[in-house]
Image (cartoon, rainbow, N blue to C red; front, side, top):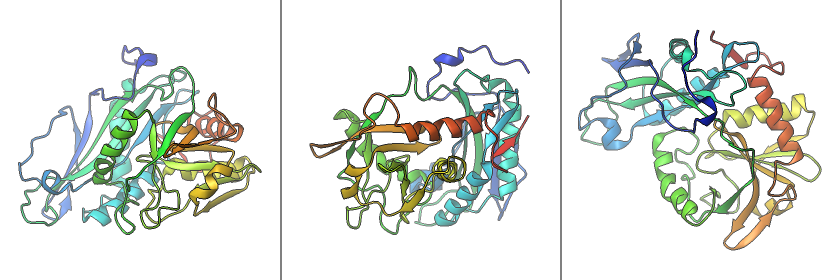
Length: 341
């Protein structure tokens, strides 16, 4: 299929409306079959559950053009599973995993001309989401919902090369100890907006959130999990019941242990030990890994030995290996690559 006439290399991480999206509705106790539409607009009741009580959740994944010309996605079954977990927490009717993957396949196939070519550095971002559309005035779950999937081509996260970022220890809490931090609910991201805007205004790229109960342990940022490397080469990621289980982070930990042969640990990480790590990164769908060069703790700086010029050695190996798997340059573990076309 002929690709769209776009300057793929100049794309940012923003919304570009593609030709098709998938829509399915939940009414009278069941999801309908759904289908593709060209309409990118919504008409909602002013009393819709999503507007009144923020009853909504979403996922994010990408479609890639591999070196041999295939269009693939990366572990969409885990996105389907995580969305189901989020739905249960928000009292939203679960979408069957098969229906989720089918919708992703249909949308990507229909928008194949929008999937950036191999080597461009760009990808097709896929956004599935569910929201309460039925009218709700009392505090209660909606009785009607809509599931949608849209796509948008996005450019490489790091333009002009990877540069480590500077983050700060936030005075705000990302999630309550027994709240909704472990699911991908829209309300979590709304709560993080004030802190991230404030961080940017003060010259920082991101926030490091500590656990809200004791404020002694590292949790995550507003939209990514932490990954650390010790001076002896062990890859460490924080463990907490209020951390969102990042698919990228889980994949990187597998790559570290099973492909690169590194020692790995998923455990509680106390902030006091962060100064002793050799490397630090933030992992998520958009960038895979964003290297962290410096952490500001209320004026006191923690500078990692890896420095502010490039990724640390092990972080770079993890990044290169996972992106190589996603792009088809490196053989993938079974089930990781889902071929669409």
